[in-house]
Length: 145
Image 1 (cartoon, rainbow, N blue to C red):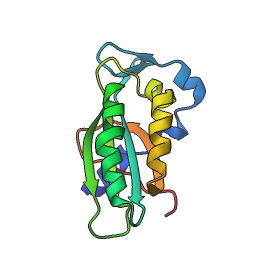
Image 2 (cartoon, one colour):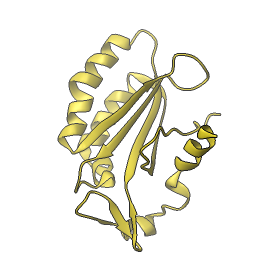
Image 3 (cartoon, helix red, strand yellow):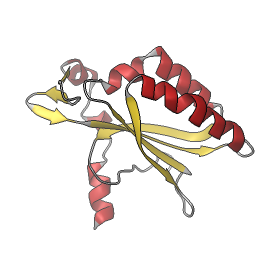
């Protein structure tokens, strides 16, 4: 039951979140996107596998540069999950913007693009999704499945 609820809560916003709709969003003072009278708090989910024999580089980069860069832009890591067994990417990391910060402004920034580019050198099977934030475990089914 919880799996179905989690999956339903973590659907892909690409289907209804068109560019036209995105342009109509206004960032509210509490850090939530407001549009058409709805309040939508967003969460960024990243999934990936660490490339073999790159674990040391990966940890040094993520802890020393990737996370601090995102935090300086107002994007806070709120969850980090490791898949120990099963057919799901090794890492699932969730980020939420601080109050008053627009997630899409961060994702459009040069700093995010550079941080993401460097991460992609150390990982494979990378995917990201922006979802409506829930105060529960959220995930998505990778497109390769």
